[in-house]
Length: 111
Length: 114
Image (cartoon, rainbow over all chains, first blue to last red):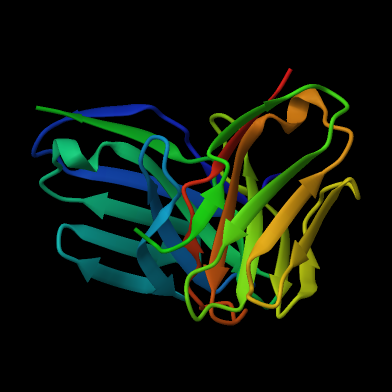
């Protein structure tokens, strides 16, 4: 079983839609959860970071962590074509910033 | 841009050869981590260097080795290349190694093994 599971998609939505991206993880000891965005031919960039359970909002983006079900989500409101990218969920392990990534979900937002 | 630069951006190697990839960390950062990202997959942790010492290693064979220099730039060396080594190799730099320390990624080196 992979430590972080993510549906690779692809996901195609019309501009303005609400997008929901999800991951599950296996180890209840994980504490820090991140969402990275990766454009084609680029490295990942940190989008959202959450500690433990709860919600965090940043503009059109909301990250949610539910530690009881080991479920992490990213919501994108009013999606734009510029949001078209691969979204990677990640956590850290081993007591240092060693990142464990999901497979990534490819999102396409069409005008 | 993150200030993390990798070279080369692309290269093609033959099975059995050796390759060296380079990474310049962001100014002020003392930690470099390397990741392998196969097509359609998330990045997988190879190893991390902190102040010129290996600080952790993922599930990669010994033919993957690294080095960090006094200026905190880093190299990833892969010996006896295999077809499955074809991937995007990413380096990420950070200031320190704490779990909540943000890592900044370079644009990656695309390695193709034929």
